[in-house]
Length: 79
Image (tube, rainbow, N blue to C red; front, side):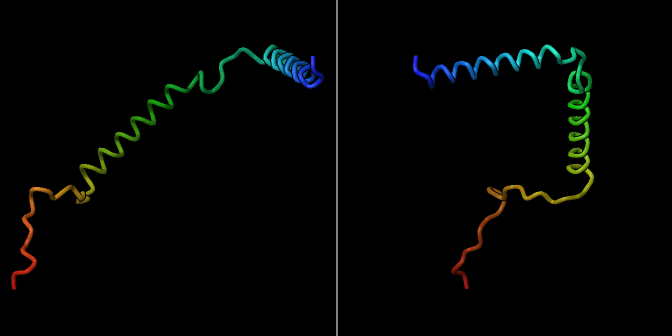
């Protein structure tokens, strides 16, 4: 076996051992996302929908919808 390949294999084996050791020491309790993930997602969705509903219905903004079919062009060479 080539020395470089042997070194790469031993490094990868050590990396796997480190990861396994790190995960074995990790606590098994739920983290923030396990506890509150869906609640944060749902509240963000409700907030976004409510704000956009207010903006679309109450602010009086004139939206720039397409005028195609509603405006007849004026002849440019009429004098």
